[in-house]
Image 1: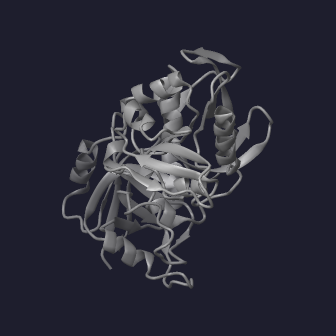
Image 2: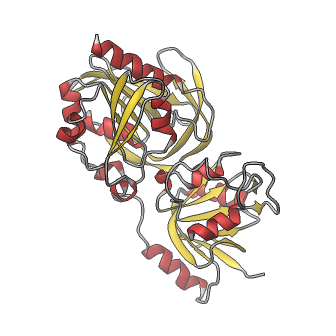
Image 3: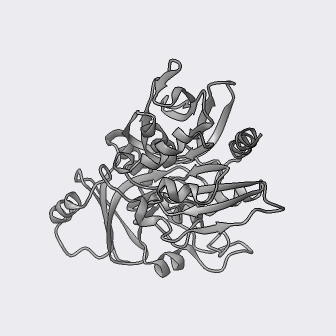
Length: 368
């Protein structure tokens, strides 16, 4: 069988066999700790320009179906697994994961050392990488090519994955609220979760202005997850939303933009949080949620109590119990809050689903 190579920018090389499409690909090397949900992971736009390694040892067991994708295509730049499933065993499956990756043109590799790769990234940090399924150049040249590929810091990617035209996800069972959702890389289950709660969701392009947002006469504004460096994004429209006192809810990339709109800075995490098993604590109640994450950047905010912003006092609402990373923000005198994780739980635990209910409650209070 052909030998494929996974080459990291620091010179570490892993040998394996081709999986999925053949060829070569470049991206930021990251790992996902989820035991399930590989189809949702592959189609999450937040993974744009990243090579994802799965830490679960056996991938592809349940195949692929046409109901679970979170967007219109696979977004990962490359895929790394340990042991691909030899058979597909699920009544919903329409094809194998290997066939799906080939169909989508996603270059992958199966290596025996995913644990060693994960430990390496935890020690050295996320870094650029390349997968080569039929390498014809010396390894030294492949390493140089990886080093010449673009990094994630300074990458402005949201507009590359977002919708170019507005569309509407209708409310289920009658409209109670109208939500303007700015698509920074939104997953399909997110507007679905809001629609289930009576929200008519108007999904807008990442470039939407304050005028575009207000044109739908929203009861609330939502900023989604998405890829790239939050320091590259324009937060002027969000600042106008906050200034107007319109209820706001943001997740993941939207949380980072909320932080920047409040005057806070963002920074790149060493290796990020990606998976469905991150423990997050609600500072107000002490309650711990197991949550789904996909982020490589975080907000730098004081953890020791309220702080001042141009929109009044704010506080950190949630923290990660593994590394004390900021996982949520909240204005104390205006109807605006955010979390760094994915409450739509596709895939993942449902501990954080209440946040959509909280958004609806905030909109109800604003309507009263």
